[in-house]
Image (tube, rainbow, N blue to C red; front, side):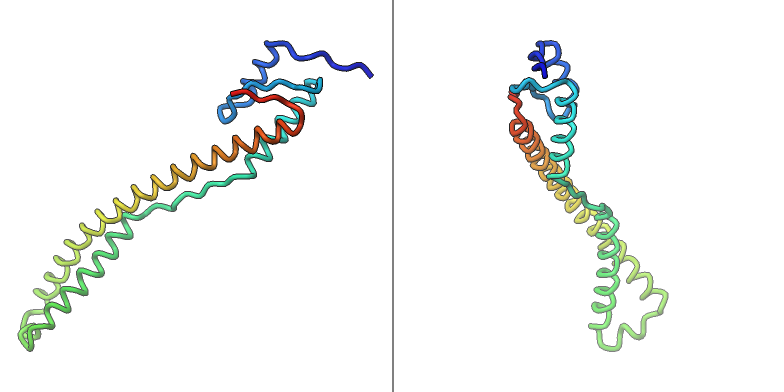
Length: 155
């Protein structure tokens, strides 16, 4: 069986671009692998490296949850504050009590939205950091896989 000739520089560059944006390395086969074998190895290692890392993303809705929690807390706090005044609160018209509770709920809902926004930004930073770590792990897994199959990888 004839040994395939080494790849030319143009073929190596073609391999560089076929790896996609995740893996921007130059790949040089060291064991005379055929073009078909190279493609099979690339596909297998890309699949393996993609499976080795996964990212999770937060579901979102932090501002809405913050507003809801704030509204509930504000209404409850307004009721508690009103009950502190022995008997006087009971004499106030129900519409005025309701208006007071709604005003307090609105004010604390605004605070809840702000807190939710802070949580959302922190969640995005955490997601970005996790994605960067996963990308690094994926790149490392890909390089290790290709080296174990007889390729030289240079950045």
